[in-house]
Length: 212
Image 1 (cartoon, rainbow, N blue to C red):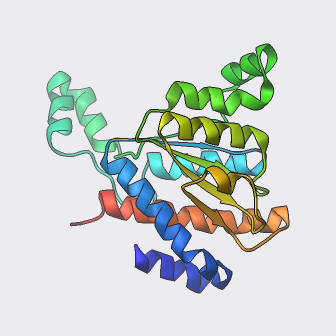
Image 2 (image 1 turned 180 degrees about the horizontal axis):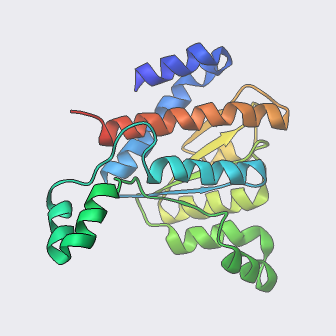
């Protein structure tokens, strides 16, 4: 863990101020996955794209091989030798994560029928379980739909992580840990969010799929 954070800080010296919060966020996510939980992620605009990006890194191979071995591979081949072999050869280990930004039918229905700003909170209501984690990405830290989701996540029993810019913000109030990258302009904040979440994904992959 510390090695990846050190590499991150060497590449992006500005992020040295976030070192401890990145470590805390990782530890929270590690505990979530060790206990059989999942990650829910959301954001708006560029942060919505970041949400999808994070899920992509967690749900399939990032840097390491994540072959399916052992009892799962044997069970696949027992059910059907041909199809099972293909599955065993190509399936990859996954860390369960859901982006709340991509469910257009659900989102548009809820936004039209109820209250648009509560759409992420509604999804947390359906997907979230005690022991899961919620990651809210907001460059300002004040996006109302992300805040509503964070409040509901906390009420249900999820751990809450914020990923924001440098300014003090409302998301900090609800987050168990808030990583505030040291920029205040939107595109500059987004430029630092990517290496932060890549670092988190790398550390999680090393923990759960690295060589022992």
